[in-house]
Image 1: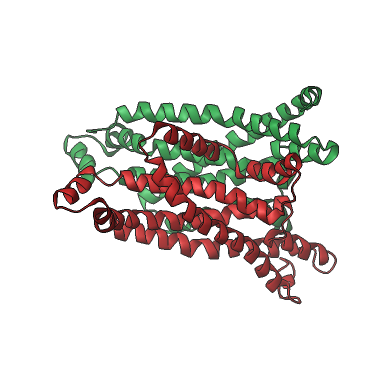
Image 2 (image 1 turned 45 degrees about the vertical axis):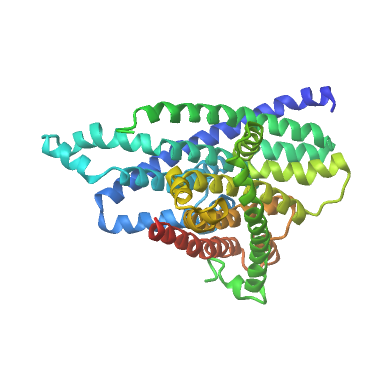
Length: 219
Length: 224
């Protein structure tokens, strides 16, 4: 391992990390939005939209992100829909994540016994109040571990972005190995930078899970 | 048809070639799943071990697998270890090593979860009825564990199939790569081939994974 080489590469990796983080968080945010929207549609049982949501969730849960990105980035332009690589990346991640989030939210809501809502209503709460003060706090404690797992999963999935020519961490590593063959240095930096990106999320996630568990009802 | 590039699929043996490409990915995932299950079961039993050292070791292992993208692990094995140790490792062998390393941790965690979900009273009752450890494991613990485990391990198969799409990044010619070759070869004759080909690949993956994951969730509900 050569120290100079590592110092020389450091700025390149930092740039790549910033790009990965930016697209990653945009994707996670979109995923949450899509997830909430799908859950909303499913709960309200809106006729046609409900079936569309099911098709979307099954499609995106059962295909790899890599294939989804190929479709968004290489196939859609042929049908007249053109997007920048960055938009493709965050949209692809958002679509994939939305399907996973929707499932997580649903199992969270399903874990709440119907009597909880009925009791809230019989106490004179409106259905919005019941949702806000009774259902959601319990569903949130139940789904939090799933949500954290999804976020980590999504941030890990960013590692395929290089196929749509985004200069992310994998792209940088592969490029540098190809040009200068400093394999060991490049791979070490790659691992370190992924740790920088994911370790805080993982630690924060388990802290959050522990905190929320205390709020669990009757457990 | 022409405008969306679907015609390319029916030219020559293009569709068969795509299916062959898919089989490359599926074959790698099936080999990896089988090895992961075989190695994951003892790993899971060790994770419930009384020894702190063993538990801590497996925790570290699990965390590594949880945090590092499989793509990074593929690079480490395919580019890194070959460089450091100077051995010659084919891309397919590296892929299987990585997926087994990952799958074994996941499977181990599932086994651990299933084992600790069996209430202690089940063991105690079996002992109280005069069963020895082997008999109680065979007739009381195992049947309950297996029921919890089967749907989850079936799910692992779909995750494995989805993850093997990554192998194209280390140069294995699988379905996406074949798709690219078909598109390149027909660039003049049908410029929109990319749509037809990648939409087909998308659907092919869905057609493989969807039945498996549906079976898994059906079993999970049925045996719950």
